[in-house]
Length: 104
Image (cartoon, rainbow, N blue to C red; front, side, top):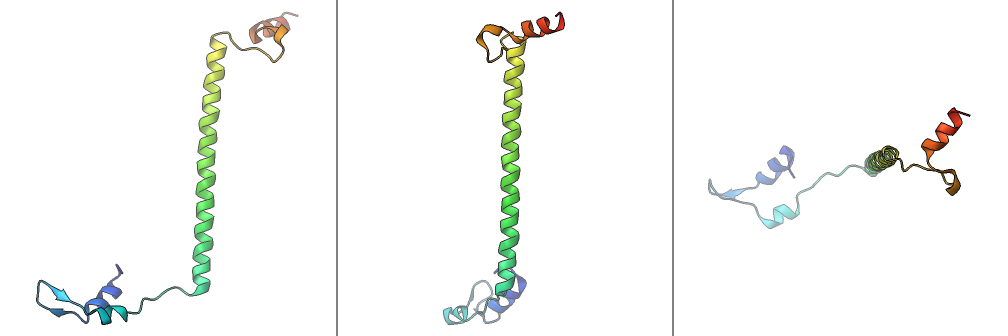
């Protein structure tokens, strides 16, 4: 409806004054609006689905990057506070483990 072709068709049957044109409702009801063929519509849908899937993948990757950055900050914070350890309760901090490995 924003195209020049539609506007020309719409206003071709306009009646009335300079400031206020009128178009009959019957004329408006009979305006033909071209649509793409079914194969063209299906191709448009396929292209849009592909774009939406790529957009979702990009959003997922951005979320993953944010999560990785958060994990990195958490690990660095714990490292600087000397809070890093292993899953074994008796092994102590990672710093002590590293010292033990280096000097053994």
